[in-house]
Length: 396
Image (tube, rainbow, N blue to C red; front, side):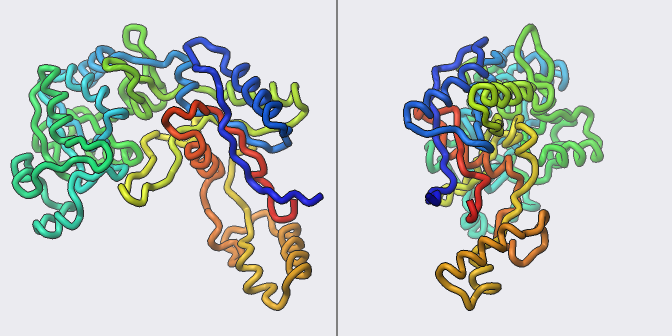
């Protein structure tokens, strides 16, 4: 019988993961138990994905506020530090900020506006227009910001992040001065020691600051790249991708985990005879249409993946074929013609009109977004995702 279902994404329930757990064994057993329970079988080219959070938990990759403070103090001198372009997040940045403040005497906190890098708004574009403020050139003091725009609470968390971040810094016995600007080099009017906290634009910020004469320039990806007093670390991403664990501890992004995805792939093959693809995923890449917030706080969507997930889709646009190449056909003839076109398609359709409108993104980014939406970030208890049919097409 012809299969009538295409891609299926299932959230797989798993035990609560603790440091030292055998994650390969847990993932494999959870997927196979779910398949038995729900009455379906694994297939070749299924995708098994594991959220970065439980990988870091199993690795025990945590760091304290004190460890952050010591590394910041060592690298940036412990006096006045410019902290620029942080995202507005209690989960993602607040505990890191505590550590940064503990490692300095004064922080000049420079916030991008009207929103942070991932879309959390400090003021609306409409209000900027009304006030005649140009965010590309104008530098605002805290006093001017309050005069023009008053208090601005986040639409979802109801937190005034300007006040919240200032309070966190003062609680650590550190002075704070807040400014608003979008040119990273503005911070050099206040201090030559800079910690740039942007995620995806960090390389450019560092380059511009160094060229403009900054004395010390580090990013969040340079903090905790090695253990401090036995802490966790991340050699590649440092503090980027970290999350709040407790009030004085963060869970860092997972360290190298290619061995894990390869081990899961091998174990599934041994137990089922099926060759699956495996990845460890972080934030997907999608935007909330109401709050305008991007889900892009991790430095990478795919932390690690098996080789079969490299590359981009190579797909034909069915509606283009139906409306153009086969406009005169319908019914069974149209179906057969489209199936034939798919079977005979070139191995690289880049630039072809018949592929326009298909998503030209990496497979890992597309699949990671699907996984992130499936697993959610709350109490679903499904940190493992099993995807079937992703590599199918109309002919399967």
